[in-house]
Length: 186
Image (cartoon, rainbow, N blue to C red; front, side):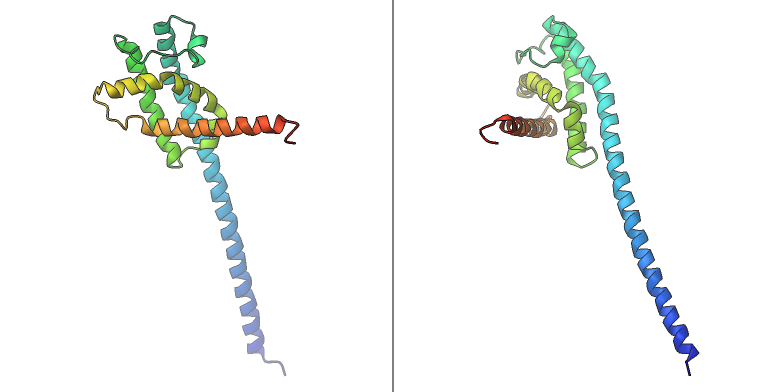
């Protein structure tokens, strides 16, 4: 004769195993959903923060540059006009805009380094323009540090490191693109 207690025990064990499997599957789905949401928020934060930065302090710096260089905003925006390293001397508006821009970019660079913002998203949104502007203003930044106007040698170090990383990625992609277009190597 069939033992009812044994059948109840087997059914209970099967239900317990099914509940554990369902809990594990639910946990994995929740974990994947959490990671996807985190990534989306990180991308959104990158776009929003840089958008605000770009529409405020970057624009103000480029206007100050166009005024000092006596060129159009578009010419000042391309980052191709070299700056004399001491151009900021006697130009308090340019100095203020430059320092505000550098401080904001430093905060943004630290956010990228710490994983708060996304490097690749920033690279595709503004990598080349950031490299060009940094290349243009870096002699001025170095001169301000050299003049020791209350800034230590690590002033803008995260921003400089970000620009180096952007430049490295740009150069490697440019080289790869040139190699992809070369019929001899294909």
